[in-house]
Amino acid sequence: MAYYNSLLYFCILFFVFIFNTIITEGIGQVPAVIVFGDSLVDVGNNNHLELSILKSNYPYNGIDYANHKPTGRYSNGKNAADFFAENLGLATSPPYLSIRRAPNKVDVLLNQGGINFASGGAGILNETNKLFKQSISLNEQIAYFKTVHGELMQQLGTVQAQTYLAKSVFLITIGSNDILDKFQGLGVSILRTEPAGDQFINSLVVIMRSKLKTIYHLGARKFAVVGLGLIGCCPKLRSDNHTGECNEQANYWSVKYNRAVKSLLQELKEELTDIHYSLLNTYDIMVDFLQQPALYGFTETESACCGGGEFRAQIPCIAPLAVCCRNRRNHIFWDLYHPTEAASRHIINEFFTGSEKYAYPANLKNLLQI
Image (cartoon, rainbow, N blue to C red; front, side, top):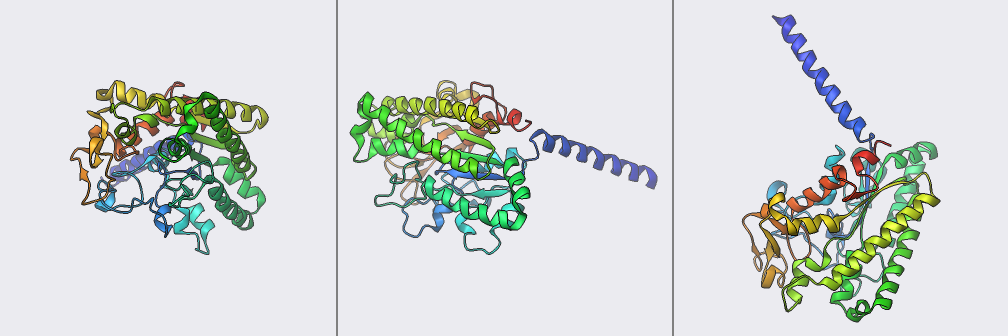
């Protein structure tokens, strides 16, 4: 009897090992996720910015997260960075500012599956959300990465560090705030005319080209780039529109930006042949959310789950001023701008397993097998 119990135990262990091996090999044994971006993927960096008003470390944020406490994520629970890591079988990359002064930053990077530089409110432009606010721009995020890169090279040696970075995935989610600034700030007229709008979009893409190449020269070879979503349909821009409809102008420039980034990535691939990338078409995923909400389990497509006023978008998600919906799973939007945990999960799942319509030129599952 003991023999058969031992045999059964061995078989179970064997199949668990084989299953885990298949999953790991299927994603190319990615050692880390290194994140650059804005509030869609911030997991707590802004908590450490003393002067910033762009924080989410207060209820009702985090109501569905572990311990039901706010974490600095702009979500009722997990956000896109969490689900991205989960799909790779990794823990969520910790926020850089939480370990900035630690003497063992490299050990954290190696042991916790990456590092996250994203900051709520961050933009491609240095000046985005700098007036009366505070966030870490893309330029500053890359400067932080350069510091970590130097320490990684010193600790592992050049060859091993380069191999580690080449196998890692660099998740980049940024651009929304640059466009939102133009519709809500003093520069509202900039995107009202085609020539000025085109010039603005081109300026963003020129900077993105430079920043992506900088990250490449620091060792990145696998890029996961998130395109802009339906910016004009977020609750805040709906509430600012006297008709209550989506701001189609904001959506128009989001599409223009996405097309320009798609062309940019194609050009970089021709120039830097050893890079691989996947571009997430967040825009069309959100179009499907609005057109076929029941397919994804949504019943509320316009109003935020947490907030106050029209579309729950005129008062921020801050308890006790705000109202929080009971069923967070049936809402697309959590607050004025951000998706719910449920929406983020669907979006990232399409990034990993979706068709070319959603992830171009290949989804991440296929990309990481290269």
